[in-house]
Length: 243
Image 1: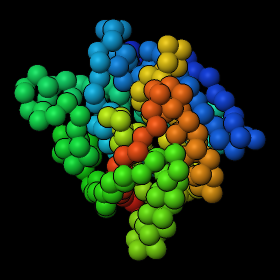
Image 2: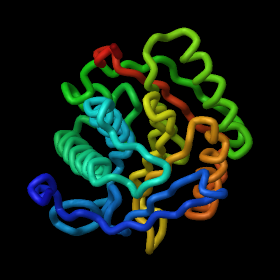
Image 3: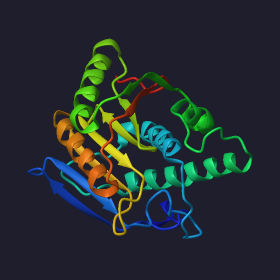
């Protein structure tokens, strides 16, 4: 097991909370396990790579989707933590290289830019649609995610769906995992002096609970109550079909 993780800076400590009558599982990582701190130098780097990290997370989850251990009742799996760790490392590396070469029009990448810069890692990833909402996130996120997801399953044979939410210059990833009927939210940002990145899991029918919790986290951790946000819906064309 050690050899699987000996080329990452460290394997993070974490705590798991079960909220809303155990309907929501939240894993909080230590502060240095976040995009601005997780590196081999063990020093803050002020990362703006969150959109790229979301793309890499989607790609790595897709590569192992049939064996991805997503459980609401158990601790987060080391495999999933490893995917999270490598996505932050690679995302920061690519973003830093682009910045040094002067190739960034804006320090915060758009989703199409992030897909392009991820290159072969994100092969087959397609943006199905992108929606901009000028309305309070707290009151509207659930309904907007739900309505688009219902459109997705009605019109497409592809079952897994990846959604990048961008608001207040931060990007997070919602992964609708068909096989387990779970949704996992990846957030690579530091949230306080005591909390780093986080991953939250709910059953699909509890999406409203996840959206409520996330909006409350934005308010509590960043004093942010967004009234403008973007949802980018993505899928992989080249995934293994079910038999």
